[in-house]
Image 1: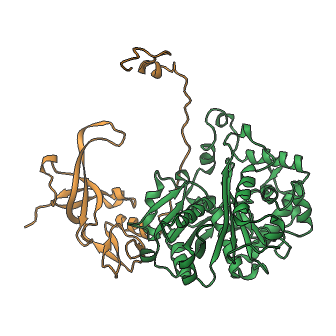
Image 2: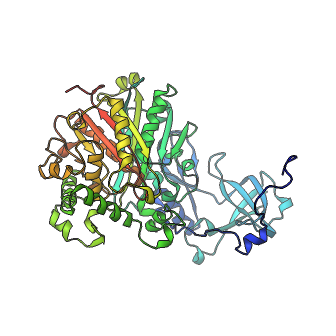
Image 3: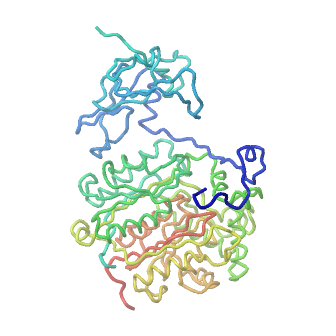
Length: 171
Length: 390
C-alpha cells in the first residue's frame, strides 16, 4: 500500500491459501543426476584419503603445494610436477559457528566450520572442513588442529573420511 | 567490420564417447594448452579476456562460470560465461575485440556428456512445465515432428536423410577426432530401428565428450603472431520462440536470420558461389539438409538433388560437413558449434590432413543449440580479409 492507495483491487491470499493448494501452481522437480569423473588429481586425492593420507601437488615454478591437488597450476598455467604428502595436522585460518544446517534448519548443537592450512601445504592454501571436540567459544584463528579419521574399514574415498579436526596441545 | 578479428589458435581434447580418465577441468586444461601453443601466446601474459560457453544443467553446477578460470589460465582476469553454443561465445569474443577493449580473447566450450546420468531428464527440464512436460514423451519426439513436416513441405525424403548419415559417417573415417566414424550405407540407416517416425536410430548423432578452445586477436596482433590468421568475415545469431506451438516446423528461421546477418556483414550476395565449405548442425540427419537450405545455398526442397549429385561430398563443389559433422564426430552439446568453427579454421589453414578440401578461401560454421531450442548462430571465416568478388 502507499499513501494514496489504501487497498489495491484483486484477490488477496494468505500463506494458508498457498499451503492448502487454493492458489494455482504447478509443481515439478528436475531429474538431474551426475557422476563426475574425478580425473587424475581428485581420483588420487580420494584414493589416498581412503588410506588415511592427504596428498597435494607441487608446482616447481611458483613452489606452491596445492591441497587438494590439481594437475595444473592456476597461477603459472603449467602442469604441476610432483605428488607431495602433507600432514593431517594444521592451523585454523578462519572459522564460523553455524547454527543453521544445510537446509536452513535450526541446529541445537552448532557445527563449527573451518578453513585449515595443513602442515606442508603452502601458506594461504587451506582445505574446508569441520572442527569437533571443542566448544565454539574456545575456537581461535591460529589454533592448531589434527584430523580425526573414520576407522579404515568405513572409509570410502571421500572428504568425509575425515570426520573433523580436533584441537591439539603442542609443547 | 571496424576492427578486423582473426582466429590465431585452436586446441582440442577428448573427442570420445567417454573420458572417465580426466575431470572436466583436466579436459579443459589440455585443450587450452594446445590452443595457446598453436597461437604462440602465454595466457597469463598475453590474453586479455576469457569466454566460456556452458549451461549449468549440463555441468551439474550452479553458476558454472565460477568453475572455469583456473584451468584456462584466466585467474585474476576478465572472465564470463555465455549460456549458449560455442559460436555464441565466439561472436562475443569478436565483439570484445571490435569494441577496442581487448586485443586477445579466448573462447572455450566443452561437453562432458559422459558425466550426465539423466540426459533425458535434463532435456525434459528444458521444456515447458505446464504444457509439454506432463504429456510424457521423449524430448527427441520434437525432432520427429519437425522432420515429418519438413519432408512433407519440401519433398526431400527419408532416403535423402539416410544419405546424409552415410556421407557424414564416412567423412568421419578421415577424422581422427571422430567417435562415430563408420563405413555404413543409406540402406543401413533406412533399416535401423524407428525412434520417432520418420526419425530412425541412425538418423541421430550419439553423444561425445570433447573440449575446444580458440584464441582470437585483433588484426595487428594476429598478423604479428600467426602465419595463417583466419579472419572472421561475418557473424549472426537469432532466437525464435521456445514455444513449439508457434514454430514453422519446416523452416529453421533462426538459421535464416543468422545467415542473412552474417552474409550482409561479409558482403556475400550469392552463398552458393561465394562459399567454399559448410559445416552445419546435423545432430539429426534432416537438420543438415534443412540448415543448408536455410543458409540460402539453394531453395527449400533442392538440397536433396544437390546431395544426390555429390555437390556436398568432400570433393564436391560445396562440401558440407567434411569433418563428419555431429553424426560422425558426436554430439558435443554446447561445444558443437565451436567444433565446427575449428574444422573450418583447419580447412582454411590447409591443415585438415586426409580430409583437406581443395581450394578453400571462405568457410561457414553454423550452429543450432539442439532440442528443444530454435536458436543458433552463423560465423563466416576467410583465409583472406575480404570475400573475393566472383
